[in-house]
Image (tube, rainbow, N blue to C red; front, side):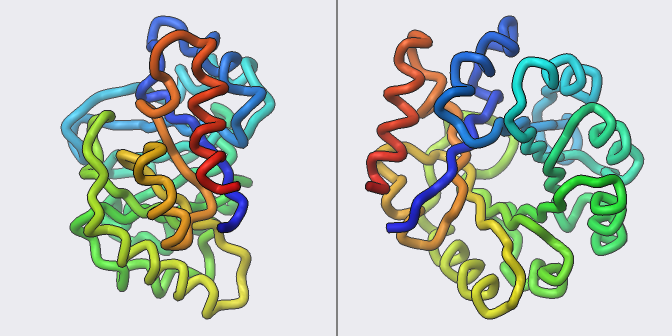
Length: 220
């Protein structure tokens, strides 16, 4: 199996101590995943650019910001200025998704495109010349702790095929219900980056390293 990166999702962390939670996983993580939800595109609310800006000094790890908001274009600059390194958006989040991705690149961030379980893989094909990351959701977005949808494994495999067919270095990320029990399926399907929340921020902080290493251990 390939070597993978791990992006702990703060959605499952203690919101009263997010900075401390970042510090607790920083030595063992490759990036930090921030799920931004607006209560409109998805049925939940999380945080906006001011919180991202306050968290930015807590780590030098890349901020992997998943924008589950619509319309997304008016807030891209705010999140970039707040310290995002990667901005991932959904094709359904605006009328002209290619233009949205171009704006992200112009802001100096890497551009990601995300597919919900009900979004067909064909939606990303015209976007591969500009994106740096493809995110396949293996749960319906909006809440943490959901059950992994094995039906999305074929979509991960298809995304890997499309990426390798091209000539660009695009990362394939998977988010949703990933655990030590499902990690091998995800890696075999072709993922490069694993987003995990509940599987990492589980129990005492002393468990975080073990939880991350258990995910990586499936890849040894």
